Image (cartoon, rainbow, N blue to C red; front, side):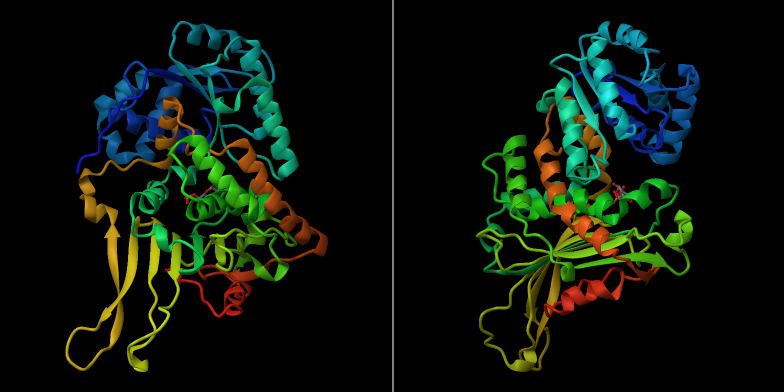
Length: 481
Ligand code: BG6
């Protein structure tokens, strides 16, 4: 099955922070792939803006190397790469001063294309950039701004950031990125839920025992010690990526697949979350072969690199069905997975030694994205009625023919959505604030109690406290492997 590529309208995309890590690793290689696939039109332009002056030619050389490193297969198409790089320009800009703004305006006003500004810079600069875009006549009703996480570090700072952006832009112009929403399987989750008759009638507390969401990483904090030690797993992953997954799995069917209909439903889920009780949370810090505290250079750091919690959604659909969420760094395997564990059948007609079996629907985001439904069947062969669970496996690459599926990375999909003006996969301001409102008391509780995360071995599945959350409820986490 060949994916259909519909080109977007011509655009000019200005990337503030164009020489930074995200731009070089994700944004520019992603745009190149969209260019090569024919989705980014040949007349579109990318203007990388950064504080330190350099010639466009030098910037193109740097970008070529970045694309060769991060998109090696596609970069072999040197003809396409040359043509793409001709569409890339560099402009020196001082976010806090006046350097470069006039030149940027001259570059942009020569065209009547869609203009998008990607703020791939520290959030401290969002306000200054927005103000200068206005003052230099660079912002019109067609303008879109894209902002990266972290969007605040609590509700107050997120609210302040929203208020600053709102001075210059309408909410319909603001695209807050959560790259998890751009992942293929995350969208498939909505397709599976709302495009099939099969699941939705069972998608509630009457039939679902519990739901697990795991985002386990094998990497540590890498070169981001400064940022990470001030954030921790709760702010870095739980408040955004895991909560977004929770919303999509738990929300009511929106009336339409349109941005506000979807985001209204997600917001209702966040607002229905009960406060989390301290004994329903576990925090951990990796140690052993790699040691978190040594990596951040603080032997007393109380920042968690792992967090697990039990969330309850107080509404008609989910009352009584707990959601268990966990995420951590340096765990045993890289695995992002949502698992819906259905209840036991109300009555078993089989002998006791047939065993009790449960249907488990597992939605894997990475690696090997796909959906597996565990169903119970008779064990083949003679010897009576013994039951076994077998997976109905739908690995997308297999089902759709791997070589023919256009693998689109989250960032490239989201940037194309910005150009198309589709906000469905972006977080609305009120959603972000509501997510912080749920997370803030948890973090405040830790600070007040002087809570210290428990050490866990690198390569493990987190601290024992996380297992206890489950054990107390007579349940167990899925294996991280
Ligand atoms: C980022 C976090 O938002 O997501 C990182 O800041 C994390 O700490 C990353 O490693 C995980 O993304 P992915 O797509 O690799 O699962």
